[in-house]
Length: 106
Image (tube, rainbow, N blue to C red):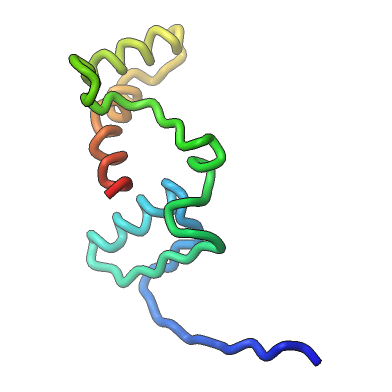
């Protein structure tokens, strides 16, 4: 005999499937805009997705080590990109990245 599966009905404005960094950021943005959000994951919230698969390695200038600053990260990014980076986009990511990472961590 097959096991009985209980059905649960939920209503939401936004359903985010996956709680990796992108899923969590999407859920937070929707909630900040006033949406009722459900964040669903097959594992532990905040412990799945590509960020975990990359062993939680994220390049960002978090400022906790001496004179670390986003401008240094930007300079390194543009140098490593050898002219292939979109400089305004790289600036945006380097400048805003630390705050976004801290928000997800919180």
